[in-house]
Amino acid sequence: MKKFAFIIVAATLAASTLISCGGNTDKKDADSDSIAVDSASTAAEEIPIKELKELDCDHYIAKVPENWVAGSRMVNFSCVIELPESPFIYASLDYKYQTLDEFKAEAEKDGWKAIDDITMGDKTWVAYYKENKSEKEQMAKAATPQADGVVTARLQNGQNMMDFAEAGDVLKSSLKVIIENITLK
Image 1 (spheres, rainbow, N blue to C red):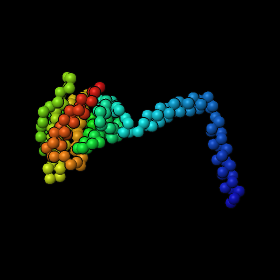
Image 2 (cartoon, rainbow, N blue to C red):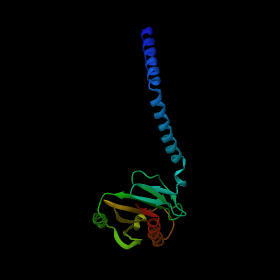
Image 3 (cartoon, rainbow, N blue to C red):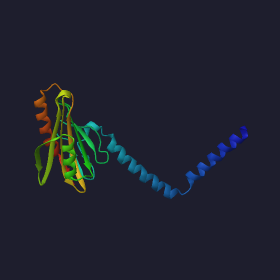
Image 4 (cartoon, rainbow, N blue to C red):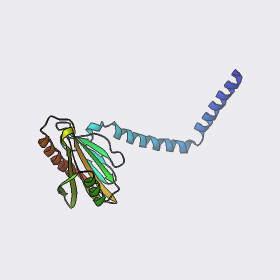
């Protein structure tokens, strides 16, 4: 039995040696290409998330505003930007395959109230606000058409000791700050 196991190990070792030695030129080229790609992706990922200044996807670029920090890397079309001071706002940015009318209908169905639209350049963002005083929750969101869908920004207050109305005002003004830092492609 020991001889049989030894033969299998020796055969496996011989096979792997033959595979690794075959086609030296192509393998070296492929290895150098993969090393270059791996080095580039590793270099980008070496930057700590909180130090990222720009988040980029196919539909928009989000710059991290002053006093804010990135809360995530861009994943597909979504990312998070955070205000790490009171009222501790979390901004979730996304691209959705829906029309602006569908976005509006969904917001109104879910109890969001329309607030003043925000115009940046030639784009108008339709904006909404929602609150739950008993839970001290406040949210604001906006969307603008882009390609076959909409780019959205949704902000929510974290736990804070601010007056509820004041925190709501900061949240609404922060929605404008986030939108000012989004460049549509």
